[in-house]
Image (cartoon, helix red, strand yellow):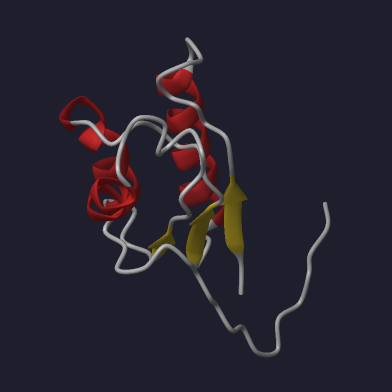
Length: 103
């Protein structure tokens, strides 16, 4: 089992968000991971940022999101949850027989 984890894209605050998400997606495809975990601070939940969620979902593998403080600055948590496609503001994943690989 292989998975990718990323955090703190800060799409709205850091100038090269498009490049960084493209590189991440390229790496995910190259490594043929089974799922993605995003640890928060992805972007603000606006219509202009829906393309980020779309790109991740188009990978065709499960993507699990977390609500970071920069996701919800100025936005109610229910709006953030809806944007990320989450039912709850917590995430629990149970993985059995997992091996950790180091490069």
